[in-house]
Image (cartoon, rainbow, N blue to C red; front, side, top):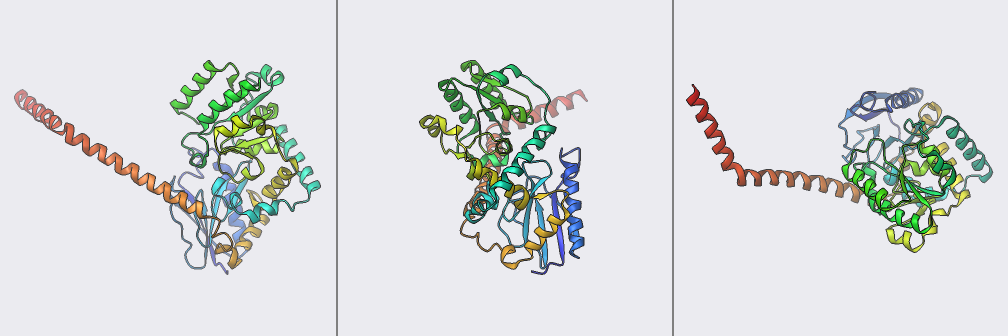
Length: 387
């Protein structure tokens, strides 16, 4: 496939520091891809799209490669770009991100991670871990708080990082995260351990707040912390999550991870599909395959994703998309059905909610409209009498 230009499409506010805390990093990524396009003698055009339009259909016109930020789908010559779990790291994917990324369902890709040299992988992960802890790095800036520090140092605990309840990837959950929190509290008590929960810093959900209050009152083993995720992961005996990026960070730090939802790293974790899985085998969460994880991490960071300042890697990835078979999605059609079904489900749910709101409004008018019209009549009558 001989592309003549690249269209780089990003949501409104994506490179605006007032709207996105990672805007500076996003701008670096954009300029890296622009430089790669220049290196390949390709035209480069940017355009904006609506926010929260992840599942909207995208098409690449003619001999154009469309790089679409924060989107999900299956279409020829459309790259799905989004920041990943580690600072500066971006998906350059054929179908999306998290559980919609190709690595989440393409068995051939997952098996490819197993071909990575183990010795090189272990050295790579050791350096990645050292650097992460040294500068307390994470996708978002972390607190230096050492709240509950005495517990961190003396009591064995399970760590549950919560996600925002409106996070789109939470729809990939096999187990609701609040149900997961309740089950883990029971499991932690049975194991004579503590359960540390960190609420997402952007979460404003009252239900989450009430659930945490209830759990801390009901279970003495439960405590809530706002400390750095690096600190909380490092002291944990296990990390359990739906599909949070903190789970990926825990893999880097060598802590056993259990996931309760689809993600692109779930295949190297302990996966559960119900709270009964926890009750039947509570010690499952402490298991890990260190060699498999190390190989996946090296492949993921060095081969699968794009570092936002790596122009040569951007050149290599764009060149890979010039392979006609690759860019037209050969080899994944039979495996990506769940991506299309999730898109249909999301759009159907959105439309159902829209119609439900309209119906509620119309029902309100039918029920109370006559009283409102009477109110308007009396108001006009009073105003007329005053005149």
